[in-house]
Length: 195
Image (cartoon, rainbow, N blue to C red; front, side, top):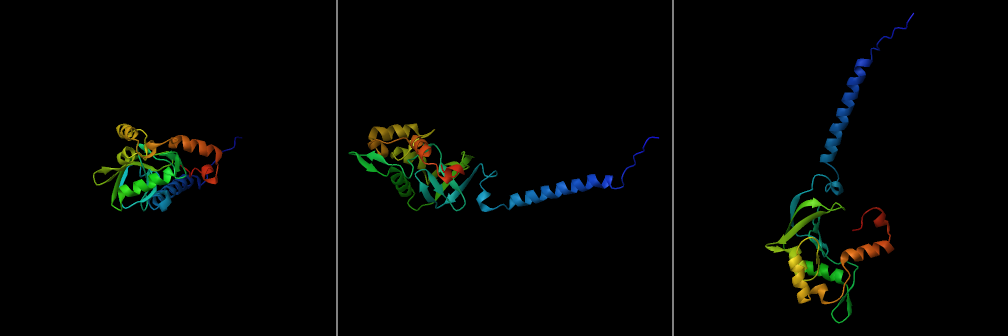
C-alpha cells in the first residue's frame, strides 16, 4: 500500500507569511535609507548636485562644507606635508602654501561647487567658483596646482611665468603621494581614509 501524502494545513500560510516578512524588511530598509546617518549621506544618492556656502579649506584642492566634501576637479595641488624647492633653493611647505593661496582666493566669500561624479574615495569632484572666478583655473594659473585632466593652458602660462611651484623644483603631487604611501602605512591607509 502506498503512503498517501496529505497537505499540512499550515502550508498555504507559510508562503504568505514569507511574503509579508520580505515586504516588511524592504519597507524598513527603504525607511532607514531615507533617514540614514549624516556620514552616509554622500553614498549613492549624491552622484551629482551642487552646494553653496562658506567652506573650510582642507588643502589646496579640497573644500569642506557643512555636510559635503568637494575636491576641485581637473587639478592636483601639493599635499599638506609636501615640501618643494621654491626660489633660490629654499625649502617651502608648498602644500600648506597652496592651501593658504586657495583661502586667499576665496577670502571669506560664498563658494558654489557643482559636481557630477564621485572619485574613488567617494568625494564629490566638481567645478567650484567664487562669483565668476573658477577656483581650479585660478589655482593652476597662479602655479599652486598642476593640471589633472583640465586647465592645460593655465598650466603652460604658470610654467612660462615661473609662478608658485613652477618657480623651483617640486615632485608631482601624485608621485609624492605614491612614494610616501609606500613608506608610511598608517591605520588610515588600511581603512581607505587617506587620499
